[in-house]
Length: 159
Ligand SMILES: [Zn+2]
Image 1 (cartoon, rainbow, N blue to C red):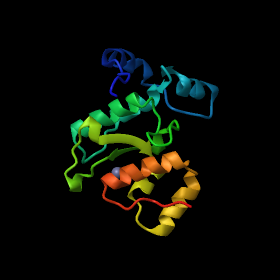
Image 2 (cartoon, rainbow, N blue to C red):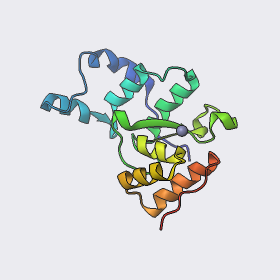
Image 3 (cartoon, rainbow, N blue to C red):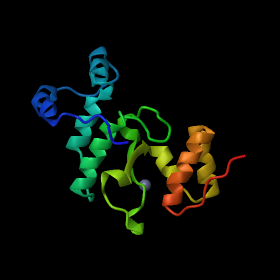
Image 4 (cartoon, rainbow, N blue to C red):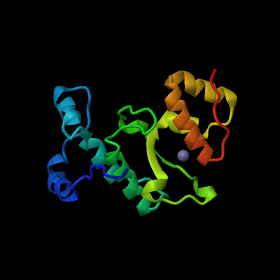
Protein backbone atom coordinates (compact mmCIF):
# COMPACT_ATOMS: atom_id res chain seq x y z
CA UNK A 1 0.00 0.00 0.00
CA UNK A 2 2.81 2.40 0.85
CA UNK A 3 5.27 1.40 -1.85
CA UNK A 4 4.96 4.92 -3.18
CA UNK A 5 7.65 6.94 -4.89
CA UNK A 6 9.63 9.09 -2.50
CA UNK A 7 11.26 12.31 -3.58
CA UNK A 8 14.99 12.05 -3.06
CA UNK A 9 15.66 14.98 -0.74
CA UNK A 10 19.34 15.11 -1.68
CA UNK A 11 18.36 15.67 -5.29
CA UNK A 12 15.95 18.38 -4.32
CA UNK A 13 18.49 20.27 -2.23
CA UNK A 14 21.06 19.99 -4.96
CA UNK A 15 18.70 21.33 -7.60
CA UNK A 16 17.05 23.92 -5.45
CA UNK A 17 19.33 26.94 -6.08
CA UNK A 18 19.12 26.40 -9.83
CA UNK A 19 15.38 26.85 -9.69
CA UNK A 20 15.34 29.98 -7.62
CA UNK A 21 14.96 32.60 -10.33
CA UNK A 22 12.47 30.55 -12.30
CA UNK A 23 8.77 30.85 -11.79
CA UNK A 24 5.66 28.89 -12.57
CA UNK A 25 4.13 30.63 -15.54
CA UNK A 26 1.77 29.17 -18.07
CA UNK A 27 1.84 32.16 -20.41
CA UNK A 28 5.26 31.80 -21.98
CA UNK A 29 6.84 28.78 -23.63
CA UNK A 30 9.68 28.99 -21.13
CA UNK A 31 7.16 29.11 -18.31
CA UNK A 32 5.35 26.11 -19.75
CA UNK A 33 8.64 24.25 -20.01
CA UNK A 34 9.11 24.82 -16.31
CA UNK A 35 5.68 23.47 -15.57
CA UNK A 36 6.36 20.33 -17.53
CA UNK A 37 9.80 19.62 -16.12
CA UNK A 38 9.18 16.79 -13.80
CA UNK A 39 10.34 13.81 -11.86
CA UNK A 40 8.42 10.82 -13.20
CA UNK A 41 5.47 13.05 -14.01
CA UNK A 42 5.64 14.95 -10.74
CA UNK A 43 5.52 18.72 -10.97
CA UNK A 44 8.62 19.84 -9.11
CA UNK A 45 7.65 23.50 -9.22
CA UNK A 46 4.57 22.66 -7.16
CA UNK A 47 6.56 20.37 -4.88
CA UNK A 48 9.08 23.14 -4.16
CA UNK A 49 6.29 25.63 -3.63
CA UNK A 50 4.70 23.32 -1.04
CA UNK A 51 8.09 22.91 0.67
CA UNK A 52 8.64 26.65 0.85
CA UNK A 53 5.09 27.46 1.88
CA UNK A 54 3.97 25.27 4.76
CA UNK A 55 0.44 25.71 6.06
CA UNK A 56 0.70 28.01 9.06
CA UNK A 57 -0.87 26.77 12.31
CA UNK A 58 -0.28 23.17 11.22
CA UNK A 59 2.41 20.91 12.65
CA UNK A 60 5.73 20.16 11.01
CA UNK A 61 4.55 16.54 10.78
CA UNK A 62 1.45 17.64 8.88
CA UNK A 63 3.45 19.78 6.48
CA UNK A 64 6.03 17.04 5.89
CA UNK A 65 3.29 14.52 5.19
CA UNK A 66 1.49 16.96 2.91
CA UNK A 67 4.61 17.05 0.74
CA UNK A 68 5.15 13.27 0.93
CA UNK A 69 1.54 12.65 -0.05
CA UNK A 70 1.64 15.09 -2.97
CA UNK A 71 4.66 13.19 -4.18
CA UNK A 72 3.28 9.74 -3.30
CA UNK A 73 0.00 10.45 -5.10
CA UNK A 74 1.96 11.74 -8.11
CA UNK A 75 0.26 15.10 -7.79
CA UNK A 76 -3.22 13.62 -8.24
CA UNK A 77 -6.44 13.86 -6.26
CA UNK A 78 -7.03 10.68 -4.21
CA UNK A 79 -10.73 10.71 -5.10
CA UNK A 80 -10.84 11.78 -8.75
CA UNK A 81 -7.35 10.83 -9.91
CA UNK A 82 -7.11 14.20 -11.62
CA UNK A 83 -3.76 15.96 -11.66
CA UNK A 84 -3.95 18.97 -9.38
CA UNK A 85 -2.73 22.49 -9.98
CA UNK A 86 -1.31 24.36 -7.03
CA UNK A 87 -4.52 26.15 -6.05
CA UNK A 88 -6.47 22.87 -6.05
CA UNK A 89 -4.25 21.00 -3.59
CA UNK A 90 -5.90 20.38 -0.23
CA UNK A 91 -4.57 18.07 2.45
CA UNK A 92 -7.46 16.52 4.38
CA UNK A 93 -7.50 14.74 7.76
CA UNK A 94 -9.36 11.44 7.21
CA UNK A 95 -10.23 11.34 10.90
CA UNK A 96 -10.72 15.00 11.76
CA UNK A 97 -8.77 16.66 14.54
CA UNK A 98 -11.93 17.15 16.60
CA UNK A 99 -12.45 13.37 16.48
CA UNK A 100 -8.88 12.86 17.67
CA UNK A 101 -7.36 12.32 14.23
CA UNK A 102 -3.61 12.96 14.08
CA UNK A 103 -1.19 14.47 11.55
CA UNK A 104 0.32 11.09 10.61
CA UNK A 105 0.74 10.07 6.96
CA UNK A 106 -2.02 7.40 7.05
CA UNK A 107 -4.53 9.92 8.38
CA UNK A 108 -3.95 12.48 5.63
CA UNK A 109 -4.85 12.54 1.96
CA UNK A 110 -4.42 15.02 -0.89
CA UNK A 111 -7.69 15.89 -2.61
CA UNK A 112 -9.06 18.53 -4.97
CA UNK A 113 -10.31 21.66 -3.22
CA UNK A 114 -13.91 21.06 -4.33
CA UNK A 115 -13.77 17.38 -3.38
CA UNK A 116 -12.57 18.59 0.02
CA UNK A 117 -15.51 20.98 0.29
CA UNK A 118 -17.84 18.15 -0.70
CA UNK A 119 -16.41 15.84 1.96
CA UNK A 120 -17.25 18.41 4.65
CA UNK A 121 -20.43 19.88 3.14
CA UNK A 122 -23.65 19.66 5.13
CA UNK A 123 -26.09 21.93 3.26
CA UNK A 124 -28.03 20.28 0.43
CA UNK A 125 -27.54 23.17 -1.99
CA UNK A 126 -23.79 23.28 -1.33
CA UNK A 127 -23.58 19.55 -1.96
CA UNK A 128 -25.61 19.87 -5.17
CA UNK A 129 -23.51 22.79 -6.42
CA UNK A 130 -20.28 20.85 -5.81
CA UNK A 131 -21.68 17.69 -7.42
CA UNK A 132 -22.60 19.72 -10.50
CA UNK A 133 -19.13 21.23 -10.66
CA UNK A 134 -17.25 17.98 -10.11
CA UNK A 135 -19.31 15.51 -12.18
CA UNK A 136 -18.11 12.54 -10.16
CA UNK A 137 -18.61 8.92 -11.12
CA UNK A 138 -20.49 6.56 -8.82
CA UNK A 139 -17.19 5.10 -7.68
CA UNK A 140 -15.80 8.54 -6.87
CA UNK A 141 -18.92 9.44 -4.89
CA UNK A 142 -18.47 6.21 -2.92
CA UNK A 143 -14.95 7.34 -2.10
CA UNK A 144 -16.25 10.75 -1.00
CA UNK A 145 -18.80 8.95 1.17
CA UNK A 146 -16.07 6.82 2.74
CA UNK A 147 -14.29 10.03 3.71
CA UNK A 148 -17.55 11.57 4.97
CA UNK A 149 -18.18 8.51 7.15
CA UNK A 150 -14.80 9.03 8.87
CA UNK A 151 -15.95 12.61 9.57
CA UNK A 152 -19.21 11.19 10.92
CA UNK A 153 -21.21 12.88 8.18
CA UNK A 154 -24.15 11.33 6.35
CA UNK A 155 -23.44 9.85 2.92
CA UNK A 156 -24.34 11.79 -0.20
CA UNK A 157 -27.22 10.18 -2.05
CA UNK A 158 -27.41 10.43 -5.82
CA UNK A 159 -30.21 9.17 -7.95
ZN1 LIG B 1 -10.75 18.15 5.62
